[in-house]
Length: 142
Image (cartoon, rainbow, N blue to C red):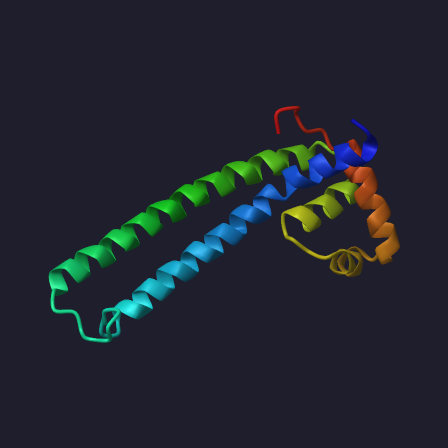
């Protein structure tokens, strides 16, 4: 496996945390939408009000329950992923590399944002990022 492939593999691994964050946000938006729809009268596909409130309510509760369980499971997965990634970032010897990798993959910041906070030019942040990836150790199964 060449240098580029190794770095791409490491980037995919590090991006797992952001994927959890995005999925949690989507599930929360779905929950909000279902609750919002429930606060308005229900209509069937033909535009007529539904007559069976009990069935409508049980479907609503079922949808909420399913999404809330999915949200909880995703939250647990996110915490596990965070701990794993953060542990690997903390193993980096260079503090600047730790900072850049943390801000990039845990906080999801753009390179220019990292440069501004750390007081580097953006080009230097890219160099530090590259070195940080090279020094980051991930296991083969990731």
